[in-house]
Structure formats: C-alpha cells, structure tokens
Image (spheres, rainbow, N blue to C red):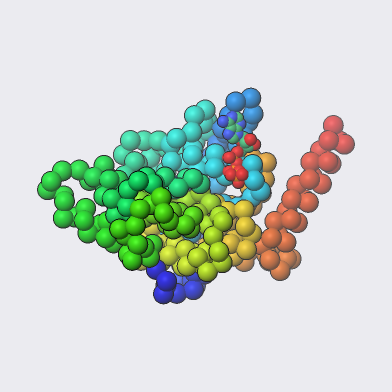
Length: 277
Ligand SMILES: Nc1ncnc2c1ncn2[C@@H]1O[C@H](COP(=O)(O)OP(=O)(O)OP(=O)(O)O)[C@@H](O)[C@H]1O
C-alpha cells in the first residue's frame, strides 16, 4: 500500500456517481433521515447522498452523530425513520451484508490469533465451504498485502501496535471486495506517516475497484483528502459539497476555516430564529 499515488482526490474522479448533475444512482441516499437514541433525537431529518466510486468524508465534532449515521447506513442502528437507501436497497436489507464492509472505531480482532488466522476466520464466514478454500486463501493473502502487513502475517494480533490492529480490521473489511466501505475514524491515534499511507490506500481502493468509501474523522486536515464532504454538527448536515467548493463558497483558505464559518452562520441563524419568535 505504501507506494500508491498521492492520497489526494484526482482530477479524473468518476462521474457515474449520482452527484448532482451526473448520471447513475448514488451509493447512499437519505431523505428526512432521523434517528432517536434513548431520550435524544441524534440525527434530525438529514437529506444527503454519497456518490459511487468516490471517497466521501464525514466530518464533525465528537458527539455530532457520525457513528450513528454510519450505523444506520450499515443497518445496525435501531429507531431509524425517513428514507435511507444503500446500493439501491433499503438500509439493513439482508442482501447488503456481503456488499458492505464496516470498520468500527474499536478494532474487532482476536488477540490470541495471528493476523492470517483472524483473516482466515472471517473469510470462512463470508465464503464458507471446502470448494472455496483456494479463493479464500488468495483473498486473505491479498487483503493482508493491501494493508501492508505481509511481513507480520504470522504475528499474534495481541502483540501488534494500535495502528497495525486498525489495519487488520480494515483487511477484514476488504475481504469479499465490498462495493461500499464504511470506516469509522480509521486513522484515529495513528502517526502522520501511517495516516498518509492509509489515505493513499483508500484512494487506490476507490480508483482501482470503483468502490465507494465513507470515512469519518474529526481531523479537519483529512477533509482535504476527500472527493466530497458531509460536514455535520449537532445531528444536522451543515454542508454537502467538494472541499474546493466549500472553501470557495465561504471564502476560506482551508476546510477547517470553512467549517468554522458555517458553524458561526448556523449559530447566528439559530439566534435570529429565537429572537423573532
Ligand atoms: N446508546 C445511546 N443512548 C443515548 N444516546 C446515545 C447513545 N449512543 C450515543 N448517544 C448520543 O448520540 C450522539 C451521537 O453519538 P455518536 O457516537 O454518533 O457521535 P460521533 O459524532 O460519532 O462522536 P465521536 O466522534 O466522539 O465518536 C451523542 O450525543 C451521544 O451522546
């Protein structure tokens, strides 16, 4: 994975993406998406799309609802109302299970198994039976190589660093070559070199496999690496645009500055609404 190009969106990003003005259905389409968790409405009537074949960043401060939105998309969240279509099916549809790869914030690996044994285990669940043994072996070897862990394939997962464990989780999600990869803060706690390498890998997965990636982060400099952004705040979408358009629209140098400006505008609009009540 280490020698993929720049980790930045390329000029030639796919156009069959469902983005406004382009052909093709989006990977994810939400209308009036609302989620209630406990006593709180955590997502409030969201409308957005995630275009196919691109890297979309889901950014916003801690607690704004990023994980909840991802859980709704992969079908593991209760009390979801509104429309939420994923790969042309309602979210949670059984046929989506093998078409989506999901990596949660906590790496889901077995410490007492080696990397290869972890991957073998999940591959056997995805693609069971003796007849598939050879394909499983190839897929596992490829997934380990994709995340640059070939030289550690026989190391116990319990002896790996945090970044290496995150990459094992990502390798599990890559098994079965999913059409949609949903990655919840995959670079949190990683050093800058590993973060850059992972972003390069994400872009190569989109470019070479045509996969759609939805990646959450609260690190704003990672926003610049995405084709499109969903900026969230307090359970709402503040903006759904390209990084360049966001910077341009707000007259800002960086996406972080654009985000702060949009937050200020939203706060000011909220105050105005209250005073005119
Ligand atoms: N089980 C739960 N019951 C009630 N409220 C919850 C539950 N889980 C999360 N919440 C609330 O839902 C809101 C959104 O949480 P969520 O985990 O989606 O945020 P996030 O943006 O992913 O945060 P972070 O970046 O810190 O992971 C938070 O205010 C949180 O307190």
